[in-house]
Amino acid sequence: MPSVKLVNVSKRFEIVKALSDVTFDVRDGEYLCVLGPTGSGKTTLLRIIAGILDPDEGEITFDDHPANRIAVEERNVAYMPQTYALFPFLNVVENVMYGPLAKGIPRREAYEIALKLLDVMRLEDRVDALPKELSGGMQQRVALARGLASGADLMLLDEPLGALDARLRTELREQLKNIVEESGATVIHVTHDQEEAMSLGDRILVLREGRTQQHGTPYHVYSGPANVFVANFIGSSNFFEGVVAKRDRDGSTIRLRAGLTMTVSETSHDPGEHVVVSAREEKTGVQPWSPSAGTSLPGIVLATQFLGSFVRFEVTLENGDLVAVKTPLSQLGTRLEPGDRVSVVYDLESVRVYDYPTLGLRHELEVY
Image (cartoon, rainbow, N blue to C red):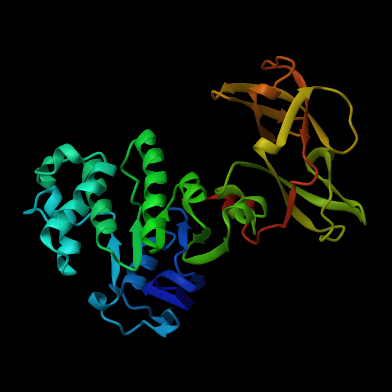
């Protein structure tokens, strides 16, 4: 199965630069999830790897062999677009059989492959239906089954689970991962769903406005976001603007608005630097107010939300900043109500400090 490598790949459509100097690699048999907001260049990236589009600049290699000039039909790639592209004149099972038959697999064997995958996709009772007789979610599952049946070395999936309801999407994630692992195929899976990317990907590539923001394992990307955008896009975080007041070998003190201060263990910024501090919602706690040195912030509970196994608190700090705290029910102590004075306690080691963005914090937090 192929490894894939892109070096400084760029693509422009008139005045819009869809991709800009994108460089990354996908290892043989790896499952890469490409994550980013709408308009970040995810689909353009897949179409370039598939050979449907040519890059303006940069190089693509399959197993270290240049792929820029390899014809689409010679790449042994299964590309599943968001539009599904099912053959309207073929029924469901015939659509799924198309790939195996094209590779010379006997019809009976191709039929058995198709039925097995349609059973996984919960479409075993719709094998004779035409695409126009199916819902959008069903059509998407047929397209996914057809891609999996193709036996391609490289699978390019563009939002393959996007049209499905939440429960079915979660169930099919595990099925999809298992089928791909059995086949040994290399997969590049585009999504805007961070939970989907975290659960499926061996590694994650985060794109924004055509540029690579971070590339690494789900754990690495989640626990060590490269910048404010990634910290906001992957998971839920609180962000504070501040200035480094002092620094020593044990950590730094950040002065927030209206005189509030935070103590952090990070020491890479100099006193006087304008910075952004991020703290994960689930790494932040709330408790009845009590004075504490450095690792808590005073505020008032604004609202509470029950989220099943979690309770989410919205707290207005004394300086007016809004903070969200996500607390497991099992760890919830004293009942807190809107209007209660509280201390927001944060995990010293999980807090991240970033350079203040050139275009401002608001711009960096925009994802669409």
